[in-house]
Image (cartoon, rainbow, N blue to C red; front, side, top):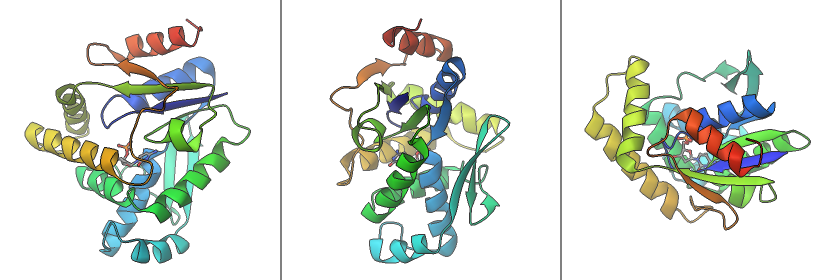
Length: 218
Ligand code: DC
């Protein structure tokens, strides 16, 4: 079974996808982490983040591996576990920038489709229902008001000990929404056959219950 869960930043996709996977006994794949790893490498090398000519040779020299350890997803970039380092506001923006580049998308989409082959999986991202798993049995587009999403992201970063400012988080989130939904290659859009779920007034358990009900598995 394949479940596609798309939507803008901070809509709660990863928390919901993780809970849904646990309930249904499926594997969970956070595809944003893969774009973040590519963004991190380009940042570290000081490369222009939207230049295909520079990023393509970088990808040819890059090893990306996604593993599951004690139920948690880990991402290895050239052998280094970067699962923690990819969760900064700077890397969020870099991930969004490199994700506009066709070569990066083709490289990661192929990898994601390979992972999904023969596997029961809940995948979260921006283009899962439209591009990565167009034949997924279930497709959801999870969204929420931008202030609500920024508040969740802010609380998450604060809980991790990061010194962030709410207005900055909101500004970054809006910039990322705009970049993700206006890029030429597989922009963030709701797939025609995806069900829209607005999580603004709902907690995680309520969203999961809603998705299970929509799947007829409540
Ligand atoms: O889900 P996230 O916030 O970790 O994703 C980081 C960035 O990666 C996001 O701003 C856009 C890009 N992305 C994408 O283009 N396609 C995906 N399937 C997942 C993420």
